Amino acid sequence: MKKSTIHISKMDCPSEENMIRMKLDGQEFVKLDFDIPNRNLYVYHESEINPIYEAVNDLNLGATLIHSEESELSFTNDDHSKEKKLLWNVLLINLTLFVIEIITGFFSGSMGLIADSLDMLADAFVYGLSLYAVGHVAVKKKRVAKISGCLQMALALFGIIEVIRRFLGSEEIPAFQTMIVISLFALIGNAVSLYLLQKSKSKEAHMQASMIFTSNDVIVNVGVIVAGILVYFSNSKFPDLIIGSIVFLLVAKGAVRILKLAK
Image (cartoon, rainbow, N blue to C red; front, side, top):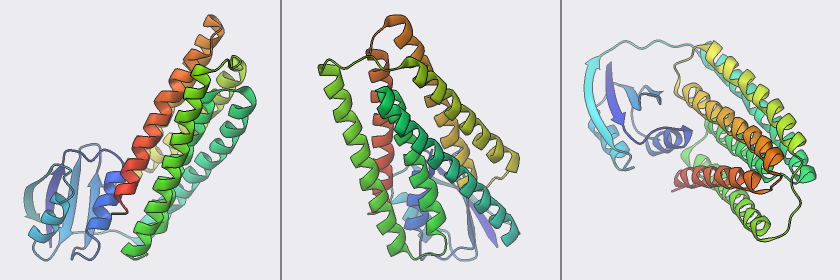
């Protein structure tokens, strides 16, 4: 068996990983191992690597075939079961935080909390898509990707329109106390998720990707907390609207990536 290394310069999140997996559906290989932090794809195969590399290269993600070498592959179904269970736990944490933040966001009038909640939902879409795709044919994978991407884009557009309306209107200043407290709660939830993912010490692609997504969530949580503090000191709605705009744009970017999976 051979192990070929393909460097993919534009692969930095689960969206690109899913694009590649769907593109390679039907190709002959034993296993795909994604190293997202280093942007490498390791292909374990017995047939020629050229058809696989050409398929990846067609995605225009900056793919470069580095080298191929002889290798032995060993993995167990038990390992994958543990990873799937861990991913389910992270998925449930994201969904729980989404519900809490979307409700408190509307009641407190904070676009930062609403945007953060939709970012949580966007992550849940990606995790759910990855889990659902296991064992399903490419047609179903693409159908789920299209539904998830469209829903996520609709949420992002709603958020951006709402932010613009609040910029132009005379909205009340959001409740900074709620912004800070709920964001701290979300920060703790994401920190727990990140701890669980890192504790697994898994080098599997979806696990590495989940760590990256959760790390980004932590940064967003801190951003909303900072916005809440600025709302308090400035007595203005604009810090909240600015952080909300940034997060909604990130959600929209994620939706575009997911929609590419449906092509």
